[in-house]
Image (cartoon, rainbow, N blue to C red; front, side, top):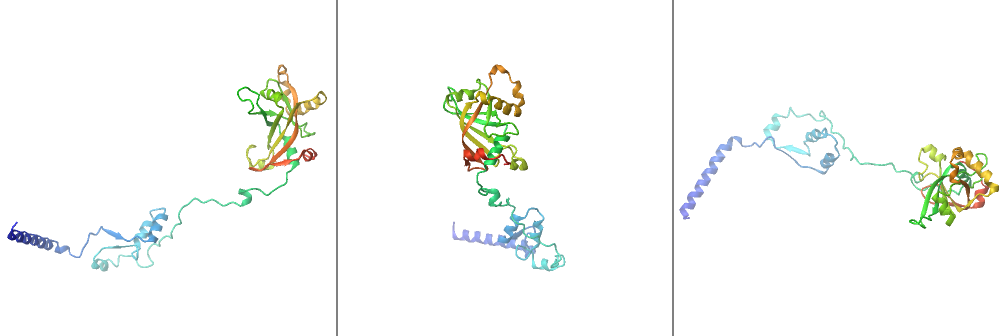
Length: 288
């Protein structure tokens, strides 16, 4: 392009810009009214996060000191001065709402942790042995597919009539029960008795299997009751479980008992305490 052509193009551009400025001259000094701009500070950011309703937004917009400012001409501010709320007459800004976070009351060590150390209570163990009408007996399985593995069975028990506690659990079994087959090969067994009528479980209405309830574990040898002791075993079992009298006789029922060797008492989530046989049989049943 020649030099003259460039000069003509430049003159045309200048003329177009002058024409546009002449057309826009009546709107000089104004900006778009609907445009709002503000600078978000740390204080505003915290309030926007903590506010839970839309009521806080108008309050933020009313603050013209540090949060936001509209771009109006100076004349507009002077003319509308009587329309703006006076200092102290407007709606008060609500205080910042703390963040909503889930909080839980921190319990004391006594309630949430380990209870105070207590010595084993043989009377509690005897009470469980006497009040329990059933227990979970674990034996060593003699079944072909699970030979040598633990085998559990819930059975009715009794340590004597209501007015005569011996601390020795008696059983009424049939040879057809797999438990008896297991005991014929290995007479060692473990009996677990959960707390049923203890003070903690009764007051707090929790299941007997709850870890906070007392559990008594007896380990020993299962033996058949001798003929001399059969009458006492009959009274012990039938007085606590009268329905046993009507069980079908073709199952060849007979009485067994455990010769206790080890006693364990657990009163919390963990940490079982061992009780000696001497203390156990000397103790009197008491409340758990």
